[in-house]
Image (tube, rainbow, N blue to C red):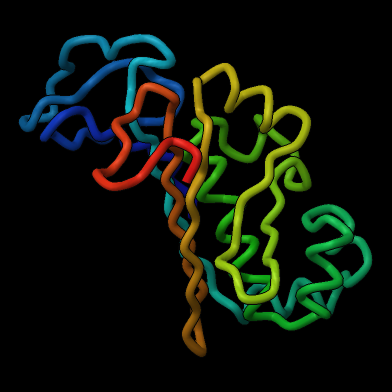
Length: 174
């Protein structure tokens, strides 16, 4: 949505700060201590909610231009013009941009791709500037969750850095 906020989970605490800034805010809104540099965080989180009707109207007005600006050929083939699928992928791209701290001006829409293999959960694949940004941040994996109702589509992403703890019973390759 309009606000570009990145969230970092650092130990047991959860802090929110405007993306691109390297400062914590305390509970009373005062500026806190600086955050450590890239690669020293465990997780980056982004979420986005979009109206399906808004995406449907944009697609109906500018079908070719909209699809070519926002979606990769594989995403276009998967969605087949269906507004809920287009909206959930749009939300996923926005959520990834928030997790990367770039907003819509930092990476191209098509630098972020939502892939869905038959019988598998959706996956985020990064290209070009988004891939470079993630590498610079130490991100090695991005998990995504997509959902939609009749009116809204939502996406949530969690980007994991190489120094993140691996959940018990799993390996870093899982």
